[in-house]
Image 1: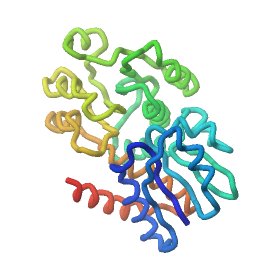
Image 2 (image 1 turned 60 degrees about the vertical axis):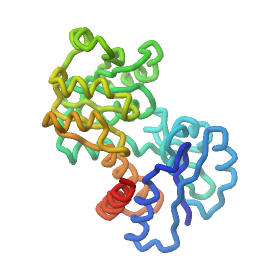
Image 3 (image 1 turned 120 degrees about the horizontal axis):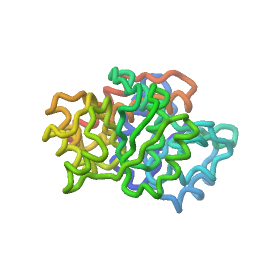
Image 4 (image 1 turned 135 degrees about the vertical axis):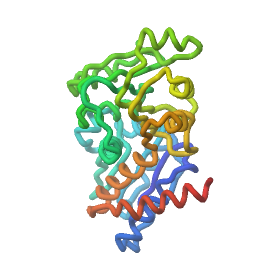
Length: 283
């Protein structure tokens, strides 16, 4: 059986190391997993070429939303969040799933991070941020503050929060040069969790706030896993703040993909070891 991760760019993906380790540990000698460069325009034609030897696909940017109209069926969570990062192929049917939510929930639980109440700040407003809202609601949050670059265009976040029963506060993505003004207006915490869903350097201004002692947080979760640490993660670690790496998200969402595609529990520790070894080799 074959499986693959699709996206553009895709050369950096750690998914082949994780999934291949899982197949090896499970004794699935006839299974293979590869990284394939594919953008939004190429996705329909690629899906049309897949035969019965294909078990499934992992999807990364920019395909998590582009895949939705190409699915035969979608898990309710996919419809709710508006993003699919997994397609399971069976009997000619394309079934879409979102394992990012499960990955975040598991990563938060294993790090023993509390997100009860309204003390969570999410950075970014895209598809990963929507998955974060669903994960935070499942983890106990009642309200979330989301920093977005264009609050007027965040309607999908607002709609999702309503479906989830979450109180949502949108604030401008900052703080830029006006750090103290931004903090005075939008709050410096203390946050139980700051969860960044943006590319590594996009959160540098928040790293500066942490380093200066102007932003207080009990934990920081950065969905980036390479290069690591990001400036945000490094600042949090230096400040004595608990840090969750994007590797934990990647690991646990991949484990759920393995379960969906193979029908067997994923060997998480074998996958972790393989992923960390691959990262060490890249460093």
